[in-house]
Figure 1 (tube, rainbow, N blue to C red):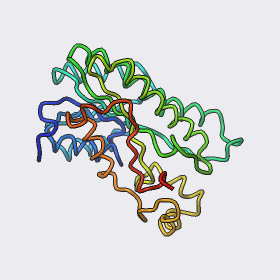
Figure 2 (spheres, rainbow, N blue to C red; figure 1 turned 180 degrees about the vertical axis):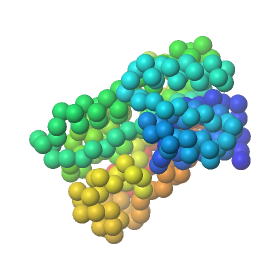
Figure 3 (tube, rainbow, N blue to C red; figure 1 turned 60 degrees about the horizontal axis):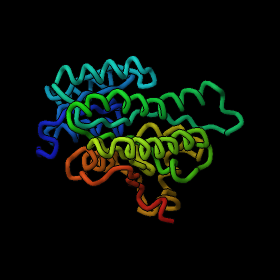
Length: 252
């Protein structure tokens, strides 16, 4: 247990699994109070149970602005402020571009892009009243480079890069920082459907050094450590940035 986020109130979306769960746990380990948000009720309850009294579970869909505003306002009411928000919830539904149905396009943009827009929009008024804060959005290496079968997903993640930069500029003078994280291939369920289109997860991991030079998938906790840095005062001079944690994928 540390104190890098001691006294800070945080929100983590997509907290039921993968990077979101690892980050919620990591924030709590460093002294934060954490509102854990996920559309999957049982999963987010498991995350909170693993943390204890400094975490609170909310079942919500980040693509619904009313739900986002409700859990954001409730977090402030519950814990007296808001210092960091990690807009991490996302979907990755791969497909051959011209065959992707409208409902997949809509769901991808609604969750991945609008979810970050709403998460930032409803946090900012509280952060302005509180004297500042840190907004963190999960992009992807696919916000920087493309991969087969991920055109719609890459579109959404590229939008998050520019959203984060724009917000950073708008609020730089008010001590609100906004950054994006661009993970490479991390061992989380969100990547499993894409793996099936590439020959299966076993095949992807057997050949991963062909596209991720470090030669292995990332672990959720490794990305959580990046989010922790951005949520903490250690990153006080970092805003409008995309922190790439990809095992060297985009260095090639």
